Image (cartoon, rainbow, N blue to C red; front, top):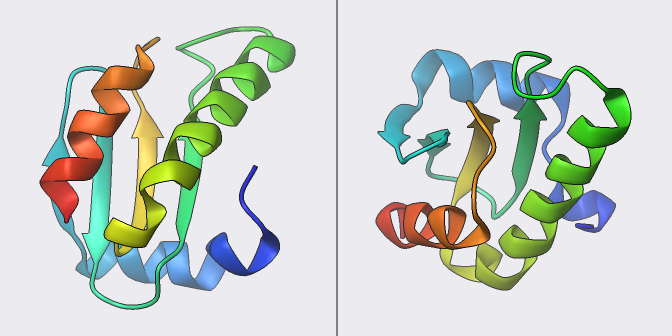
Length: 96
């Protein structure tokens, strides 16, 4: 899990969604905006119906992001479908 100062606030997410550029990977897409190094992850209920499963996917994404966050700018990740952690690492490399 990312520390609180490495997670985006709701106002920052809205700004990234309106002004950020999009980057797509398989199963994961991201909106990026230059700024502080922080991230947020959203998992749709279309990906997993159970909240337990969505939270597991979100925690996995945060764990992978913790490793590549120093290279990533402010980013908002949207999980489109179940993904492998390698897909998120690949997407992180596109962002830096």
